[in-house]
Length: 178
Length: 242
Ligand SMILES: Nc1ncnc2c1ncn2[C@@H]1O[C@H](COP(=O)(O)OP(=O)(O)OP(=O)(O)O)[C@@H](O)[C@H]1O
Ligand SMILES: [Mg+2]
View 1 (cartoon, each protein chain N blue to C red):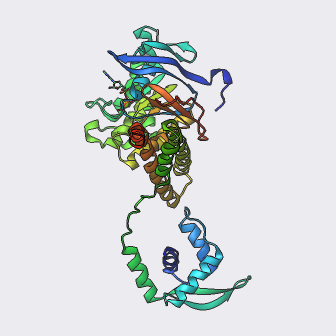
View 2 (cartoon, rainbow over the protein chains, first blue to last red):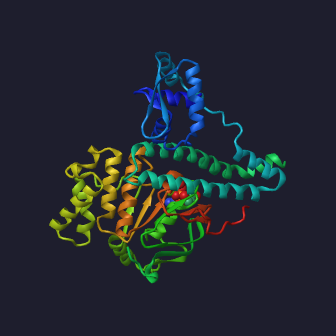
């Protein structure tokens, strides 16, 4: 339930209403997909039900009524527990790129597979260049630099795999078509 | 930066061939770099990247093909003409070991200027400016053995750029640095190069380094395997895989 934990974390420094949480989420996690308002309210409902947050007063500032939410001691303990928990590394077994290479070798040939890998590398590198541009722009804040680093390193892992696989492609072909 | 179309091409190579003994390292490489381009040359280990760079920088002589700098053919020039060219128009940067250990950072950076006849005082002033540009002005009086790898490399970049060369040739310039130190060197290097219209040829096997360039040339087995422009469009030939 990472959205729930994210909201608990964003409530840790004081109570907020749903729309405020949505903005905080976008500010703090610039690389994440923005949350829909409905998703935030559904999550808050669940946190309420589980006793992790409480609903406080309802404010009205010009617009519609907004209920303020606050994290409970129980919610804070759950957040701390979750933050301390090491995440399991992904298994990466169902790699779509690897699957395409195998299938290309099965239904076509080495040239088709290698061509796919080269074009995939081009697409990956273009994305990496974009993130590098973001990172080297002096006006980028550190939060976004850190998010760009994460993206660059993950794309780079794929690029390295693509390069190694290109170097292994003849052996792989021979194994699939002995 | 305003550039007329005619002199945009600074460096071109056509069908370069180079062997070491009987083993071919380059088997017909062509490329061109425009003024202010930051061009990455990538490819697997042993593919011929360093050999290509050494040929382009006029350090190695290709066996066949031609190299032009600012329209003028340079691969057939005499050794003295080529070394003058390297001094005045080119800067080179390797992974490490280019600084003179007995000289201070400021003396190291001033050296290329002194060698091309600039007066001592002027050279010293320029050296300070360039050290400052790469954030290592406070190291001016230190010698390379007292510096970290990242610091020494920033001094080396300052030294490579102090003559304001037309072309900077860099071979794995951040290969010995960790990610953050490498990022500082590359970020500053590409920014300064773009500001001053210096063309940069950046050899690397690291995609994260190549991502600093506007364009990438992939070398495989001594031939160009693909050219990729900044939009991520493959603009070059893909030789059929053998
Ligand atoms: N001085 C030399 N004498 C003999 N052979 C050489 C010499 N320098 C390079 N080679 C050979 O030429 C080929 C290309 O080498 P080069 O150093 O240009 O590759 P590279 O792409 O720079 O590799 P790396 O990524 O490992 O630095 C290799 O097969 C290498 O063994
Ligand atoms: Mg090399």
